[in-house]
Image 1 (tube, rainbow, N blue to C red):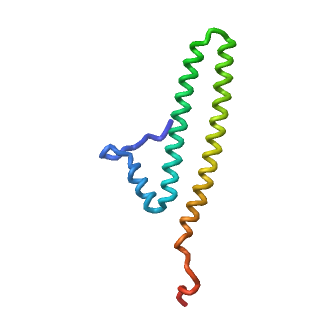
Image 2: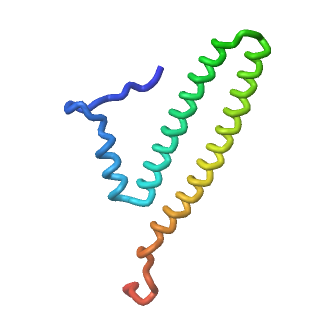
Image 3: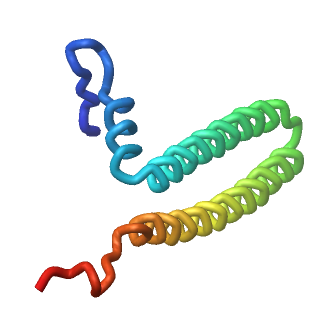
Length: 117
């Protein structure tokens, strides 16, 4: 059983406020997070559409051989797409982590000359 999505009295879930807070703290990480979430949603939507198309093709099969061909193509395609997505996700997360660390370091270091004695 999942955790219920509690809404505020005005009917919102607070997501825009959370996004604004993240943007204020670290805009690089917030922008990357939004990009990753939209890419994930796009990937899942595409995969769901392909799943539906495969089900239609399976229901239209006239023989077990035809069904086996549809299933084989489906699994081959799905494995290829999930592998590509996982690789893209890993690369994006690595780049985001590096960019976030660079952003956190820039402009925040002090030199030895400005340390009071």
